[in-house]
Amino acid sequence: MKKFALILGILFLASTGFAQTWYTANQVTLAWDAVPKVLTTDQANKYQVYSRNDLVSLGTKIGSEITATQLVISFSTEGRYYLGVESIRYPIGETVGIPSLTKAWSNVAADTNNSPFGVMFFTAPAQPSVLRLVP
Image 1 (cartoon, one colour):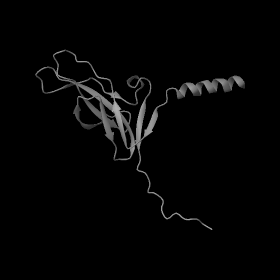
Image 2: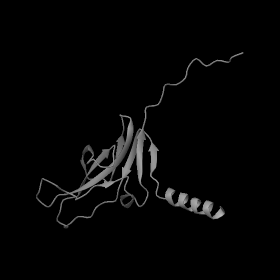
Image 3: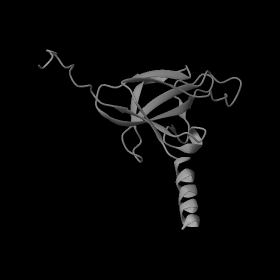
Image 4: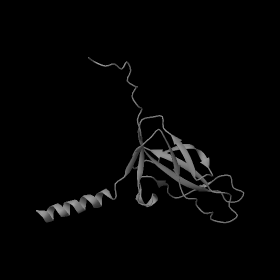
């Protein structure tokens, strides 16, 4: 029985090591590492940020392409969100970008240094009022 409990405890600890963390917030700052240029003559890489509510969709664009490596994201619709980023290359003289083959997603361990996460947003309830003591 002790061996069973020990094995069960080890399995539990091992499984929680790969758990996804959920953050509750109406606004977060998402950051990522810069992608090096393919050629030194390329224009600065740009990034497009995405959100999605499931594990398989391509996501919905958040804002437009940016050159910064972080973005403040505000939520106005309740739900659970995964955040993603794709890099976009602009060779010298080109005005149409070449997107990365895949996006990096917040729920993918390999894309988050083994710390997958998501963001939850729920509207807070109204504040209680008319406080009083009851005799």
